[in-house]
Length: 187
Image 1 (tube, rainbow, N blue to C red):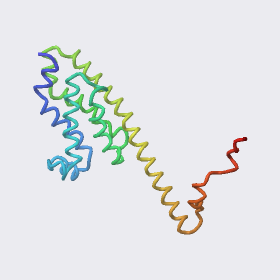
Image 2 (image 1 turned 135 degrees about the vertical axis):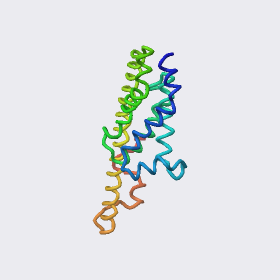
Image 3 (image 1 turned 90 degrees about the horizontal axis):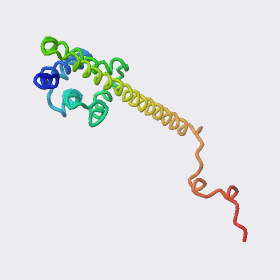
Image 4 (image 1 turned 120 degrees about the vertical axis):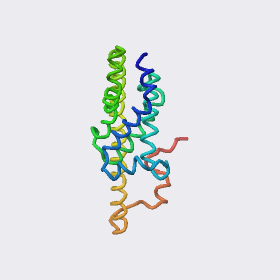
């Protein structure tokens, strides 16, 4: 038996414990809600965590890391955590947790079958996922900060407009070309 077969045979147990690791990073009441509500409309975060972890795991079994759909699956989980103001380490720790889950569930079988080298290669692939995760997290946080800055600028512009301290050119002046800046062609 190889590691891939062993992982396939234990997919549901591994994915379930991996989801538990992610959910346990939330406060107890939130974790309970995320695990108990199965409806994707009543619990979109819980549904996303479950479906995307399974998809990431399946991608790893196919030998994918940074190609294919895995970046999208990873993005959906990380985006949620970045928006919830988790730090980078808190947001991405779930990727590393997969290594611990696999070892805790399959350590005996891995040793019996002599699959340590295959496990090492899988762990390298998981580390690559984590590196990709950092890029995704940084991109998400950058977008959040930009949106907050834009919102603040719009708020202050509205305040200045209401107080009459904000100057806007009349629409007519904005639409008319500047005659002084363009030379007229000579005949």
